[in-house]
Amino acid sequence: MKSFVAAVLMLFASLAAAEPQPGFDYMQTQAVIPTDNPSKIEVTELFWYGCPHCFQLEPTLNAWVKKLPKDVAFKRIPGLPRPDWAPMAKAFYTLEALGLTEKLHQPLFDALHKQHLFLPNDEAATVDWITKQSGLDRKKVEETFNSFSVNTKLMKAAQVFRASGATGVPTLIIDGRYYTSSTLAGGNEQALKVADYLIEKVRQEKAQKR
Image (cartoon, rainbow, N blue to C red):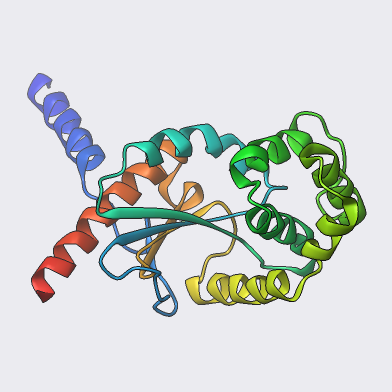
């Protein structure tokens, strides 16, 4: 009996240690998504400021990003599966255009999820908040928010979301070819472990092509 129990425990241990499985822990993207720098392994987070799961992942993700190897590049793209997510995508690109990402990225999450200052689909309130937090002229913020360049980036973000095959956020895309999420992997920590696995997988695939 003891030997049977030991065998079962060993089986569970081996399953727990098994490498992530395609179709379960991660998926291939529907189309290959071009990366910014082919010499790097690119990790892209699809996110939405209004998403509580993205908000919860943020501290863990930031700590993980700080430890990424030099051959890995990280970036964020706002997820755009539906029109009412557009205001927060515009907010992201407005912060980027005005050089405010480092200063206001986390505070915008906090404004929505801790302070509940406005709804994520309220464009006017979003512009007001950015104006107040940045100290910039409201007209400048509003013009940037509604600019051609920001709207062009929105269209590209929507294309990336469709090409990824993702069904929600947060989603981590690895080098434009694979993606995982807390839903697929079974939690935030697990998703980052799967991302680590996929980074190494891509690294080996690139090495074989040289």
